[in-house]
Image 1 (cartoon, rainbow, N blue to C red):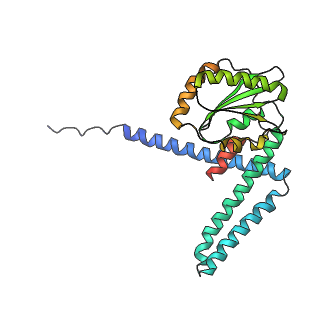
Image 2: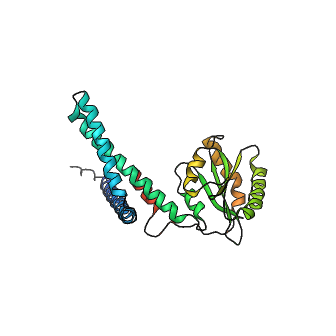
Image 3: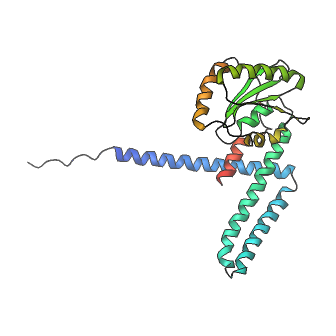
Length: 251
């Protein structure tokens, strides 16, 4: 008696559907990134008349240098595609830098601006906004990273000094000998401007390993429940800085 052929597993069809859905999601994400870049470019060009000339100038300069270097070794047409690519990357870099500077300048001075800047930093930083604060919207934010623990304060300096001292004492009880840094955001003497805050933190010495960061975060979780409520200072309307930065980096 002839036997029936085995039924084809349904897993193959499910895999195809999953792959199709994933492809559609990637296309939608790419379309969204392009829309964000275009929106940011339109806003920036409207407010920054030097943006387009600078981008074109950087593109032409880098492309010309690359072509000239290739011409010296009689390989100018081989070097041209690479020079165009590098010129495009240079123009995108100029665009990203000027958008970032514009957003920082608009956000500076708003309550929670430092918290917003910290949460938009690249890297494995663990940010807890407003671990201490006052009713006047002064705040201390805690950052855990390779340097150890960084306490970032924003607000009136005379009110921030006792806040920082108190928070440093609370943190030191839990983390032992791990270094604790304190930074006050502002434009006064001994302060760090908002636009330079991410760079300032990135330049701090590396004192702990990546594995120790998770341990520090767990130890300090007990303090997070006592954090003061605090507005996080969103960026100006029309510019979603974190998404724009990510989209520009992926181009």
